[in-house]
Image 1 (tube, rainbow, N blue to C red):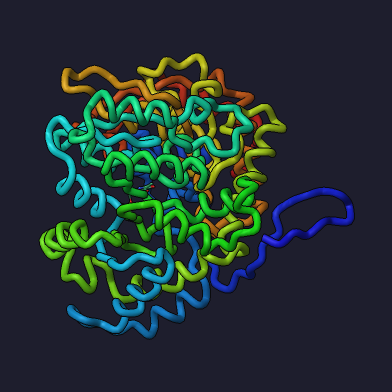
Image 2 (tube, helix red, strand yellow):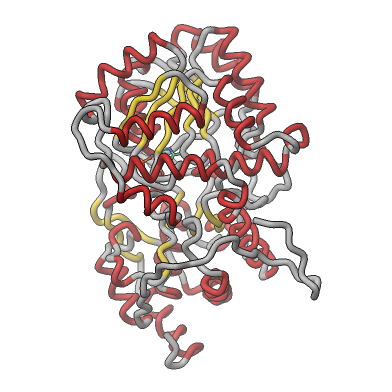
Length: 482
Ligand SMILES: Cc1ncc(COP(=O)(O)O)c(C=O)c1O
């Protein structure tokens, strides 16, 4: 976003785009919201969109596309094999990352599945800055272990450290030593670390990680799904990169990586994914699995329209005006919440605003899922759908014991270019009301608990009638307001 100063001295985000297509929203009453969340088993994934006012569940596949992206979709060349659309996407990706090979996949977790199938064997370890839900599940399903070696600062809620997604270099060395090089499947670095507040890594840290991997002969795998935000933060926060172009930074990151995979639901603002490498051996192994799990090599499960949109989306990712909107809106929201003493991860990261449920609802034990309770109560208070990113998003151990998450977060995603500033202000207002009434909120318990990735479709119920009391208090405070 452009550097525009305001006469009155205030500072707030100024969009460098205009809106030309809109979608009508519906805000149902607080009583209806209470019924909707109960029907959804207190799991915001199970809400129906017709009952949701602002959908802040995720940015995955729901960022607003540009006019250029929409126009490109109309000119897609549909063919099972050898479509012109694929050639355009391949050209765009090879230009973006500067890699020799690109293989398409239907989404990010499909790439993770292929990575795990090829590299992970029982007893192997994958060290990483921090796990992502599907990445971890696919590594463990193949008998591997995940070692999270993010720097200590990365797990502090309040911090001014600019690169909380960095790997702790000493821990990386000691994980390699303790497992032995042959048992390290690969090192995974996640751009814009999703589960700990969308926090970036620095180019300096990535360079060191790469040096260690290269010296040990261990592949360095980049999850580039949230690279756009990470890129913006490197340019803004890393002094040595201030005068580099965004593309120079991407190419530098790419040179340091052995394999790059991404969800194009995030990177490129479309739906799909892909894997890039310069390594011919890796390419051959990965290529074998694409037709088996994804589709033929020139579509990999993606529609041609989406492929056209991703090609343009990647080009636009190299435009700072295009990729700054998310981080700047998130920064605004984080600062407004901080002004109201609402506990939130700082510094502001990418993806969304992350409310610290452990502090917000410090009377709810982790065994009763404070982040899930916050997501459920915030939907009742506002009609806004956020996502639980805490213990509910973890898996139980083989003996059935809970694995308490390092952080209990309510993630309020800001899909890029989707919400206006007044809608963000509405979210802040309702969160403040909930904070002032937090004593009314109690915990949740599972009534239906899937074994794998339970957060997607598990069902819970409140431990008491606290939701009825919360709705009554809303009515008392807001009268007949929605
Ligand atoms: C960092 C990261 N990696 C992988 C994925 C999985 O991608 P997909 O949802 O396209 O399967 C996501 C999705 O949110 C993600 O944020």
